[in-house]
Each structure stands twice: as structure tokens, then as C-alpha cells.
Amino acid sequence: MYEYFEGLITTVTPYYIVVEIQGVGYQVYVANPFRYHVDLKKQKRVYIYQAVRENAITLYGFWNLAEKNLFLKLLNVSGIGPKSALAILANDNHLGLVEAINGENVVYLTKFPGVGKKTAQQIVLDLKGKLDDLSEQSDFAGQQSLEFKDDGVSNGNLTEALAALDALGYTKTETRKITKQLKQIDADSTDDYLRAALKLLMHN
Image (cartoon, rainbow, N blue to C red; front, side, top):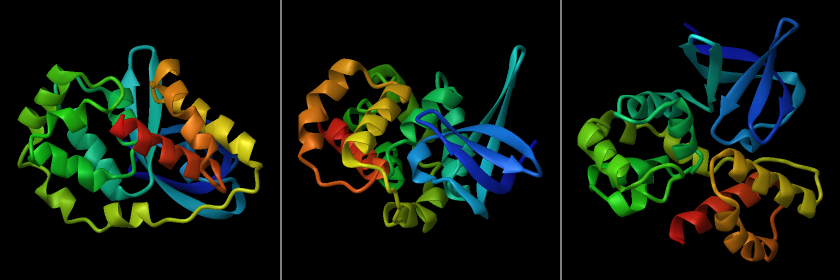
């Protein structure tokens, strides 16, 4: 079982990133791929969870250990698999997620893709009071203040952000409702658009 990879980020797509270690490229699915950027000179540490099934071995990656630990907690919930847990983590407000669970805020939880009322109630039932150690980790706050660079044009960044939302499980109808608002935002990167889109979707 892997704890983390430390290598070069060679590819970033709406679905996954590629981490190259000693000439081998590992396909790693992450909650928000555009949080990362291609850098062939500086190594990046990516925390890893390996899911093994009969017909597939899939790697899931995390920005830091706190994010990975929250992912593992979500996997303990009945009905939540790796893909669903990763989609929930696509919203950067992880402290808000912890507070919603502890506060039994089912309405907030149903805003996440693939999470209906029954699943939201199950999340509260299984995790309420079991996340106190995570809420104290400063890494959550750090995620929200990270800055990213992207030299792409605005329209291209918006297109990539919409593709990322599709990969996370949001429907065309949901993304169409917020596209007009996103076009009015002066964003410098795909990550900025994606962050704004997730906030809009959570409040719709």
C-alpha cells in the first residue's frame, strides 16, 4: 500500500494527473486536478490511496494528508465509494464539510454530486462526532488560500473547468445554469473558475 508519491507532475486533465517517478508515469485521480500544474523541474508530493478490485487497480491522490484522512473517513460510510468520496472533496471547503456533518446539516450535504437525502443522513449517522481530529488540522485552511498560476486564455480555462465539473458528476443542466454567471467572473485560471463554479452549485 502506498502512502505518497513524490515525483514530477507531467500531465493535468479534467479527470486525473500523471505523476512521473523514475521514468514511470502513474495515473492518479484527484478531487480537483487543476489545483496541480505541470512542472518538469520541481517534484510534488501527492498522498495516495490505492483501490484494488478484481478487474482494476486505481490510484487516488490528495493534496495533503488531512485531505486523504477525510477521504478515508468518507469511505467508512455505507454507500460511499472512492469516486463518490473524491467528488465530495472537490469542494475546497473541507472544514465546512466537517461542520455540516457534525451539525447534521443534511441539506448542505445533498448539494454534493451523487449524494441524496438518504446518503446524506447516512454520512451524518456514520461520521458525526468522529471528525474532531480532522477539524483541528490547519491543512484545511491552507487549501483555501493557495495560489495557482495558469497562462491559458480565459475561455479555455472556463471550458476546462466545465469539463472538470462533468468529470465530477454534475449534469449538463446543473452546469448550464451557472455558465452565464461564470462568464462574468474575471478569473485567471481554470482552478479559479472551478472554485467559483463549485460555490455557485452549492448555493443553487
